[in-house]
Length: 305
Image (cartoon, rainbow, N blue to C red; front, side, top):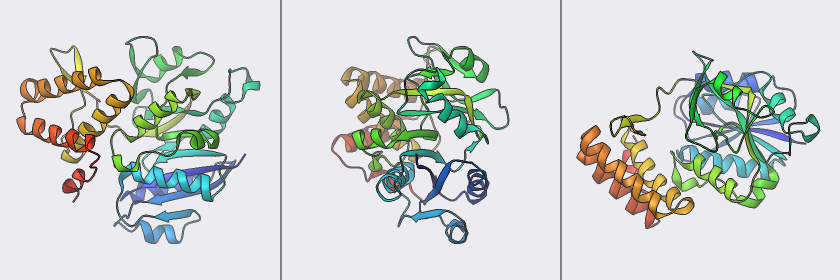
């Protein structure tokens, strides 16, 4: 079993150095492959002297483009049987890979083998708190802390749940069946689309609750709206909002249907008219979604500095 870690990085050299140092101490890894999204902070110069395999892109292609290229290179060029995918800002616990591999072994009594699985992603400052809340299968309950996630697990797993691309493992077999992440998405929704595609292909998906990746806090995800009945993923970043409006529209159309697209758009209009009035955001959202539906994925470039 040849396991290759793929790290996508952009202008976060201190975090990248910390992560690479951790990965180089992990037994069982055959190789660390870093995809550099044309960083300008000295990352390229540091990588030139680091004991890793490096693939430097000619421009910033976002997380989507980086993971597309990294996964393709790991499988097609580096001979990986299993790929461990992660951003540069995560930090797997020293035993994270061991725990992930153990949980996927059918002989351990944990059930069927897995195709696409990962750890809990916890706040590095508050390790009892999940960075990305988890909606439990079969209902509407969302858990925000590690203890609740572990209590809900069956044989150490949360079936059909994974948080890509934060320390997740994906098999060569699954990659060969479903392909690579959609590079044109740039950011925001590419990881979700890949999970949805894996799910549609019948992949065996899970979160292993005793495996942990530490991650910087991203605050409280989802701004309450409609008198607290639901939330909306508002971001102050015009780039992130443009990509979210475009990519979420496409994901919902492809995997959930037009009714869910209409519900998403109802929430968008409500949020930027009532909850946080910014009518210009509605115009941006419409422009982004229309471009994506036409197959134009260049619109986000106007927001790149």
